[in-house]
Image 1 (cartoon, rainbow, N blue to C red):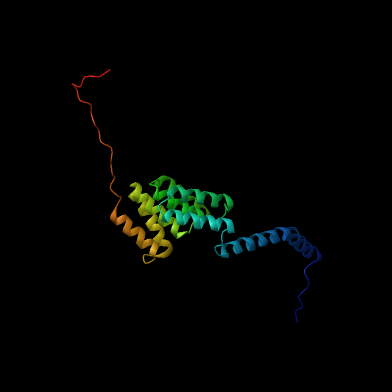
Image 2: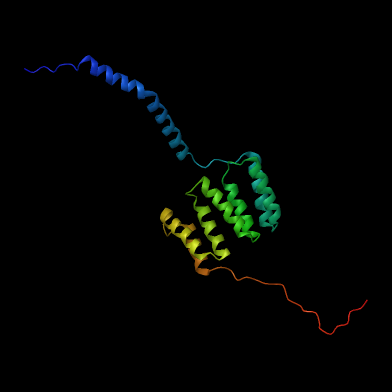
Length: 187
């Protein structure tokens, strides 16, 4: 009959010492992982009450064609609740309505910095890129959308249709009028 001998006292002390040395770091790492994963599972939060009112005012202004009024309301909402990402999407929408695609792209990218998987921001950025004439970059946004939600999601279909339609035609309204060569100058 074979009896297993206990490990020597010195080996047990070394094991216990190692466990005690790394226990605080392991506990801190576990806590960090729990907090990080809980943030990832948190749903979209509601805006601050005053910011919600300002967002509604901005949307009403935009629907009435008052783009600058909408931008003012959205910027005020951003001041009230700077952590609410959808405000950047609204600002981008207003900037596109004001024909400021570069500014809209910047707002979409800010939203994507906060939430890299935001389908509305990816699609909006792609549409603004098409409006600006950057079709290749817009196709990159389309590829990103297809990898995240597939070809059948509404954002992918909308951006695909926008790319297929191409950039809008530029309208030039200024006329060049040259003065007459023989007109005498009256003093």
